Length: 327
Ligand SMILES: NC(=O)c1ccc[n+]([C@@H]2O[C@H](COP(=O)([O-])OP(=O)(O)OC[C@H]3O[C@@H](n4cnc5c(N)ncnc54)[C@H](O)[C@@H]3O)[C@@H](O)[C@H]2O)c1
Image 1: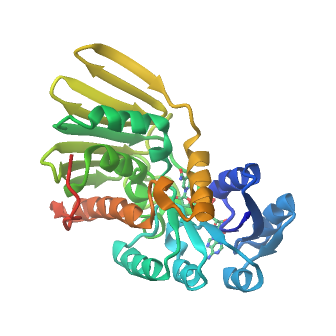
Image 2: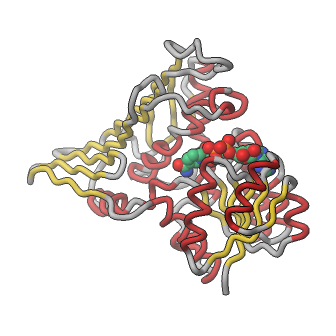
């Protein structure tokens, strides 16, 4: 069997998914949809498939097993519900939306329908993350230290709070998810944010610097800094414990302990691994290799949105216990 795939949203990130689907002999792109007609037609032309500007029409006309949902955070509407109603498996780009309460309702519909889900929190597919988790398995984490520092993303909706949720929700959420994976659930956030030096960018209303204090369910503490004021890009997710530290810096893992320092480079393309895992899950019915299904993505969204709320109110925000233990 070949998994018949369609895309909803054929902008920047969809390109990678198209390449991975094309390179996977177990999957076949059958249709694409974008509200921007020229984009939809150009992309469809590249793959010799049909172009649609209305996803509802596409879902009605085409025989589709799975959709890669690649619309901006503000544009999810009721797409997930309509896919679930048709039994179509869902890969949703991160963030899965802007409002955790809405995503919660979508999750209930998804669960009832029994469709498989995966999301674009790709960093967990780096093989060095497994190695990091192996190292941490018997350790107590004292503190985390993380950042996502880069330049302005040119996509017009990205700089508008109501459309993207700002950098924390749209981008730094990757590091929120990685830190949760390494150090366990985050129970409380206390953030401050400001628009300091990028205010002259047209139509921009999101903070360009943000610093978040984290308290984990385990009792560990941490910090996360986020900024798009930089000429280059640096990301880090560091974990500290007694006599050791471990850090993931883009695709490198560095562990320092009493036996010295060792560095390992990732050997997989996490974006491709993530897409292949989703296709395999559909073919086998085994979701085991999907690292961040919709429900897990919702937890990372909650933390990112809570940090925004804290920055706006000036008060700490306590997250509802997830029922999962910290590390
Ligand atoms: N996983 C990653 O590393 C990663 C990287 C980049 C972007 N993303 C995520 O992917 C999503 C899309 O980002 P992008 O950079 O591709 O944005 P983009 O603006 O380049 O593309 C989005 C496309 O969706 C289309 N669209 C909007 N509403 C639609 C609708 N209702 N039906 C069909 N098409 C619609 C737009 O016309 C546009 O072509 C965002 O959530 C972003 O955070 C993830």
